[in-house]
Length: 291
Image (cartoon, rainbow, N blue to C red; front, side, top):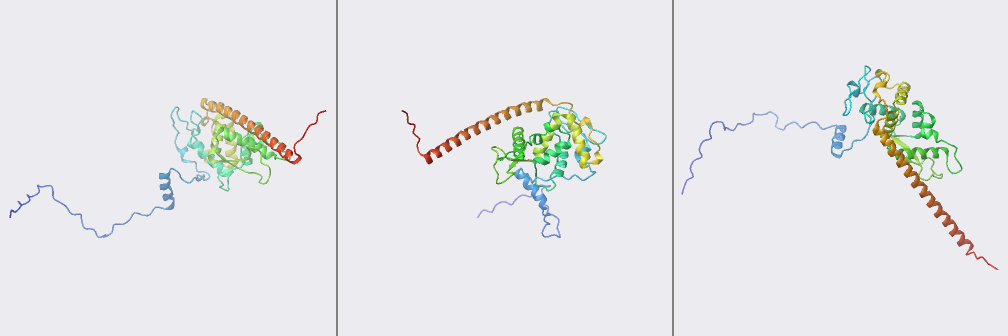
């Protein structure tokens, strides 16, 4: 029987070292994440996190105001009071503007419902110095009739505006049990829709936006340590991109109004034909005798 040759010794440097002895037989497990951390981890996978209002402690400025804001296509604006640019050159809001609107929204929605009523929005626009004709809900608060109330009429116009501008909102019934205005309903703006609307208003008319938001800051006493908003953090004029968006909104509004008008006309014709058919069934065919 052949015997296999012996295994040659390992060269120097290939010695196998054993790990040092440890007194802990079982290694310590990492701490279990808190429910908030679990929610954040879940949001990282699903792309969604439960929205919440940012904290706006009185006298503590937001973190975005600590440094100047820079963005592509433009420079940065930083003031001594800590305010930085509220808009990008194309009119899009910066994180500081979004944080400011979230602070206002928290005051307009103290019950944390997540949406605000048209009356609340209208009051905030009044506080910002909007003229009645520029306050779409208030300007359309006209006398109602036996079918629809004045609020129904104003809700209809505000809802059409939100749809044309794509302002985020939801529609609910204002007066359950009453006749509903066709294509109407009460629009409730979300924080996203409110921020977008105020960004359009403030970037479209910077001078009015500067004066109005300062009035709102004084009224609600938000971030008093920051001081008043300087004119420099607003745009000088309406940006070209916002002007283009305005033209697109006009086209969509005209098309939507025509489609609704056509639909109402067709509906009225169908209802009239139905009423005539019902009368024919009741009275029977009608004959005209000619002599």
